[in-house]
Image: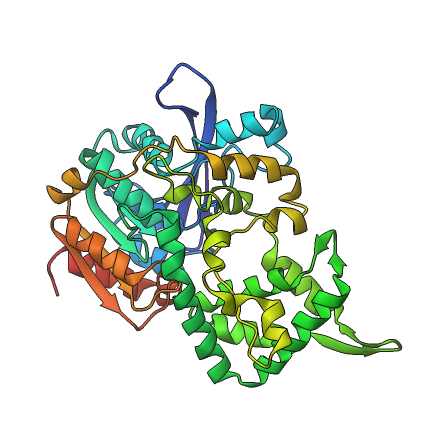
Length: 431
């Protein structure tokens, strides 16, 4: 273990070996990385543990600088473990460079089938006694981390003392089709709100889309397409996302000897915003996190989008309507335009066709839950359907919700200590 300091904190890096397949504990092993953080003034004290599970799938835990944001509140009473879920961060990586070590697409897909919430929770339960001596811990789950927390409540509640969830209550039984059928209207509302705030962006988005449709430029091997441009709408789910999108669009064009062209700055910004090089598991596993009930996900976002023709950019350009941005959805074309995903296209197809996904949640066990749970539910959350979330909240015995429109989906990041403070007060029945 390697310990070091940041202002007011002591950090210790941990590396844990766990089975790739927990049903075969003697088989292949992978490594999981976690960063322990404790207030320097309490480093020698016995403190309860708080496990943080990041959103995603496919993102490593946030890298903090000092006791910023919610971490500053957490270390007042907890010893915190920031976990890089399997395949992310400093855990054994899974990407276009490493997955060929598994073999071909079939072997890669079989390997990645072990990278869902059920395996992540088994990792946590393998790690917990090594750190806590067997004591249960508090879990804080953001977004997909909340999905993992609900799986934890279903599979191993004995490992939990308290559960805190921010923007991450999944539907217990919805198919991926249901998730996206609910998502597209929410995205359309967010786009309408953006255009109402920045009406100049309506024409600007049309001009950019038309230019991309005609020229199909590339930036560092990344193909810039109308569909890729529309996917910038994922920014609209964050508190400052509308403003960030506006500032990106206003820098789109420059005058050149050959006429208007997309600026290098815009092309680079669009490439960075739409590339999955830093989080390929997000693209590979995004629909798989909804896989249950013996049905394939089968590119659900792509199929369901056909039910909402207003999102078709070509149709919008033929008329005088706005080009609608899209949001948190993965499509086959992602694996054609992005060099970080292109070699993994066949693997993605096999994952989309897979039918042997095990159920993730246990409604009976959740209905008899005894673990204190509090969940922040964000009104009209673009990423997690509020109606789905509230149905799940009512299905988990003892769960208390804090429904708020003060924050968007990134409330834990934007609201920092206030959000964590509120959830702790809710779960402790102090409000």
